[in-house]
Length: 111
Image (tube, rainbow, N blue to C red; front, side, top):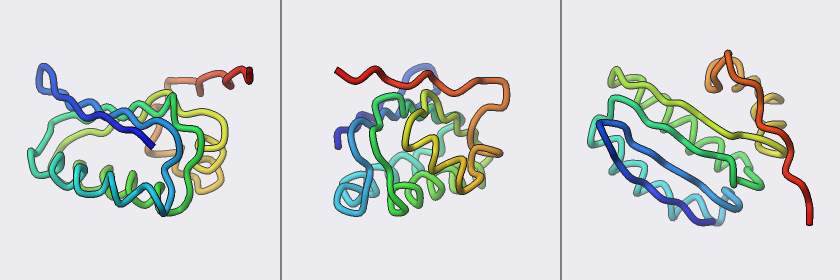
């Protein structure tokens, strides 16, 4: 898993690539704690390159969402597709964590 966190114009951007699972989530949790401590107004989470997520990864994203929202901020999940989208839909997280006016991204083409 690779991730990148950057801030610009008062918006924090988090992009996650690869697999977000029990093995890799520990690398991300500390950075998410640091991000939440900055009290961001908006966090954009780009999941377009996320291939797989398990319950540990879901837990990290839900925790980020809840903590930022509790501080009065907003979290926008973008680009979710394939297996991660199926997990969000199965858990009904798409109902409140994904923008209602956006259609899911099209599936990636396998090469």
